[in-house]
View (cartoon, rainbow, N blue to C red):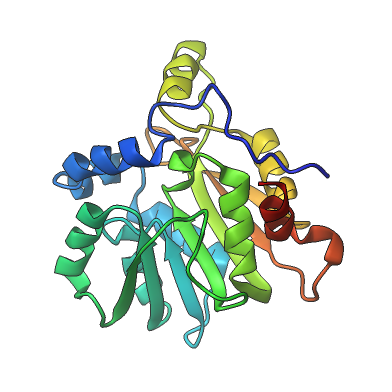
Length: 232
């Protein structure tokens, strides 16, 4: 297995951390009004059912943004931690939850998570992967901070079937289908996952949700985050 450690030269304009932060500086003011057109409460519930969170589980929300996914997680467990690179997005989440209670927030990078190995029972990430310059690296980080036997759930934008929409999508950010998701999760060191296509009634295939399980015991051939670091 060969890990991809260099971002594609054809990345979308928002697959750049500085541009993404600037984009969300302005989008944060209307994000909660725009988001329901693509990511509804019903979709969130369906995804949370896949993650199967227990009330005692410690869960990390990577790319928590204004806290839409965080809200759903808090309905399942009190031990929720949220991380985002955009302080402007998190400011909206702080208005809803406060900075430290009931959610502990961190400003940080999905490709370099500031947590110890196995720090969380499960990891959730919705609407964030499309901005990651190196998605395999970030997925490996999500796997690293999840306990053996835990689950990682990632929601991203499904690749458009329409060729014109596909060209526009490629120019903006990462859109991907099941085959590309298979490659990314395999390259990140996962061995077991399932994809679920989701969407609101008017666009039922807008999102691809992947639920992946971290092996119950460490596999030395699948230490993806270590191999990424060694090849940098």
